[in-house]
Image (cartoon, rainbow, N blue to C red; front, top):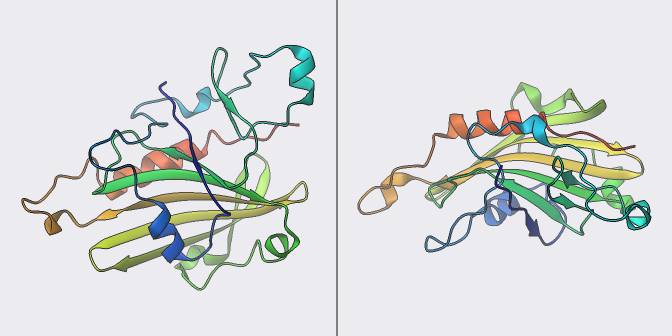
Length: 202
């Protein structure tokens, strides 16, 4: 599985405006980051330990890791995003993971934002054995749109945010109109499958 992990600065904002501004993939001239190719097995994310045991003992638990031999990413300040293969300016899909140990973030962690919509605004979902508050949010501004399935939990003294984000631009605003790399429904389905790969290290 080809893998590229994008680090984003700053804590995952709850507002949809922040989601909209943060979700655009790289420019049209460059290749979009790839993390979740179509048909890839999300369950392939397992422990990876390419460094000596002494160094591994001092290394914090990774936020992402593949089976050996593979890549692993430790905790970072901000957000790590796994981007669906084929994502572009028209339609992009990302699984984002954020973590904050700030007291204010922990206090408000489970509160759905004003943008939360639908019956799932106060649902609880089990992710890897940890209960998460689940809400759906979405917004559209001018020719742009964003929708998110968002999950929040307080676990081991930190607020964790997992967001499955589908965003882009209406194809008909381009001349000639663009063809999306995949439908919004397909992106949402693939991200939901990727969510099953999330697990917790002890």
